[in-house]
Length: 437
Ligand code: PHE
Image (tube, rainbow, N blue to C red; front, side, top):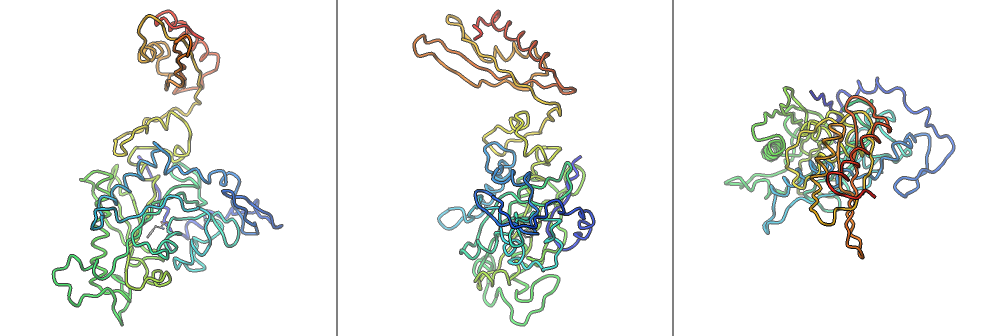
């Protein structure tokens, strides 16, 4: 069963995290000013710097937009849901999608712009990868909220890699991916569905903050927005997990939304936290120059969704380049249901085999696959045709196959593999009439 642990930026529960992470940064302290290069840009380092070379290596991998990567399938399903659900009068999608925001952000973007207090534990060096005292690798995609709103956007998804210092286990990895979304509505849009919207207003003059709403918002506008937000997010959960999925809402606290909730779905016999959301703090909108709208926002982690949807047992698999993993997701329709089949922990061993096809008899790659499988059995994890070449003069065709060997219970020696590989080669020559090169 998957135990997927929450990693939200919130005020509660963080104290537990601090205890865990007193190991901090001594080894990375950089007393003398120095430069570090991230994605082609130089940054001055200081006593806050704690990004490590291993983390820097991870920048720019863009797994969420890599064709056939499981994260990109889940990303696409979410994008498609929002494209389909919200359209303008001309039938075009209302939401814009931002996939390429730079992961190096300012402390202002990641924290201040979101009203996260100066002493909030999520700012600590033990939790974040700082480039220097003013700059860090974003710890959540919400870091881009204010700049996109300031650009005039009302409906957007912003998707990318986020970085957090954490323990390392099957569900935690220092890099993971989030989808954040914002929807801003004006008076007309909010009360669009109301029969007689006369006199209904987004804002209230001498209101008080309560459990249910912010001081500046009217209760009716907040309730309509809450209803729409929850309806749409339950809709998303149903699209991802199936329409019968059981959902529940849990009250939550985030510095940048009020009221705030978490959506949990019942999956594999346990309640799984899927996303955090809420009505955006009006002060954030005001700071972006927006005075006539209120908004909702949510953020979700792609890895934990993909781990559930595909039953992927270890978060490290997402960053692996192992073809035994990646090839299980080679499909064009992101809605294709797949259950991941565990690959062996023992290393792969790839050997190639090239031959000329017979000139006067038929040849089908499937014949070769069967022959190879007959000889190699289950230790053949994968065979792919990596080269198909026809000689311009002789018109002879050659194929090159890459055979990936891997034993499920032990490490194969090259000698064993060579023996099986030669046996395949000999039999192909004998039975399929090919000429091994
Ligand atoms: N940024 C929050 C997190 O990292 C998620 C969130 C986004 C919550 C937007 C509310 C609104 O967990």
